[in-house]
Image (cartoon, rainbow, N blue to C red; front, side, top):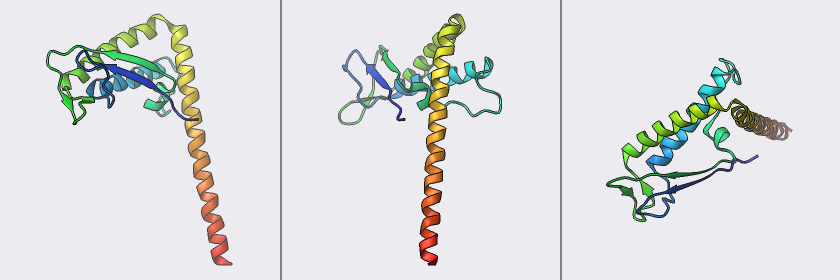
Length: 148
């Protein structure tokens, strides 16, 4: 199963920051942290369970992050990446507060979202185990033929 997420990041001076930037970093960070906090607090995850990865919480997600900055600073020749540090802080703060509040006020939605995240995590772990098993079998087959 491959993760698919679509994030459209729009700036008032540039129609789309194709390469993302600090606002995307803040969004991803807040999303992952809030879902993990909620999952642990509400016993979707036990204390000893590993946290959900960013890919687990973003799989299938489509989001638009729209921000206004007085002086946007873009990186690279194509100006496709926002570089303002304050954008990360602002987006992270707003998304964290708003998403945490939404999950608390809508527990049925939160459960459906967390169930989807947990399914993604289990699929990711199963794929990792299959890869590990496959590479182990391949190595032992090679060793068998070298010994012959």
